Image (cartoon, rainbow, N blue to C red):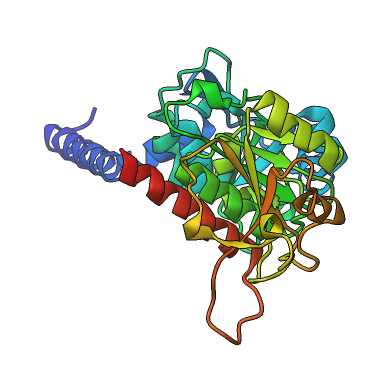
Length: 349
């Protein structure tokens, strides 16, 4: 039998080891919880759950192929009626805006960035839509491969392209303005013009042939989400577009920006001479502003309408400039005129 002293010594050793184990457990409690979070099968997000056991890594997966197609092919965007938005600012702007969060169909988040940056914010969302929003975790390498940006930020979303009704002239409290893009092909300019249009309360946007796809990745980024809050309609040609403006939207005056003073002006025909943008009464009647392409300006069809003595509905407008400046950037010209409309609206309120 063990002596009493030996038993006491053994009990002391056992108690000491237990104390050390408890201290180690307490000091590593946070780490233990973090590990458990990383291996939990599912965690709640909005109206659905996110799986940590199903992290996509292959560019050949169905989801990865869909994102690639939506980012690179206009035809695929048209067929699916979907596009992709990237980066935390745009993604969370759409999720937190009650007018756009129902458009978000699926989130793709880098598994590293999810835990380090986005998890708490995503789990705190309260989505208004009754539809489920899927949150798919992907490897950082795959997200970087899919991204259309130079410096991916670990999050992107597949979103529906909205179908919005254009507010016609009779339905607005203020005299509306509509924007027509006549072959504006640069996505940065298209996005900027859409953003300016939303800022001034533009009632609708009409796209003519040659215009950039407003749902292309660069145009979407330039618009900062404005494209999802504006009615956008495409017309096969100017004749059809003009009919939409006049017969469906109630437009009574069309002003085509000539970019430079005097362009399309006719000294013998006062009706076709270009007017300064601030000299026009934008509140007088429902109007449309036409912005031409960056390189060639207005199309021949629109130019011909300016000189049409029968309708006299399409007139030339320009932004006056100091001598030595040939023309303004399409987005700058359009924005300057749109904000003159907004200024006149504000002064009449």
